[in-house]
Image (cartoon, rainbow, N blue to C red; front, side):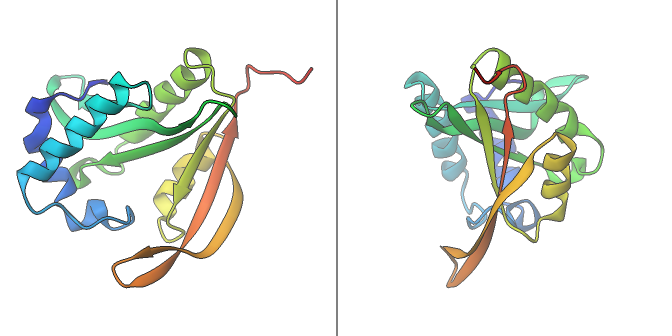
Length: 170
């Protein structure tokens, strides 16, 4: 994993213009590369303002080619809680790539960023994401009915969380 940089715009556009990748994200697929450029700018600005951290996921043999993103945003510093978000180009699904990246990112979040808990907000129909989160020790905290409006319909949300195993109760 590495920093997302402006030269990743083509790869971000390719990934986020794919309807299959965007199926459970709650956003329409990108239509123009300028949207990818703006998306990357938001990553850079959020990092500069200490509001988020996002990484490019790359294959070890090609560290310049972004194939996915993973990061932490919606940082609730008062309550030491952060939300995780991730996308992966569909050509790389079911190869263990996101599993490996998520393990590294979670460890970084707990050990280096020192957050107490990580939240994940998923579409209940995204079984792959739910299984991945559960594999990494996340538990379902809530199921919200029709709490998200997208593309003319109300959708449900499944909320998972994971507590920092390095924190102990006093």
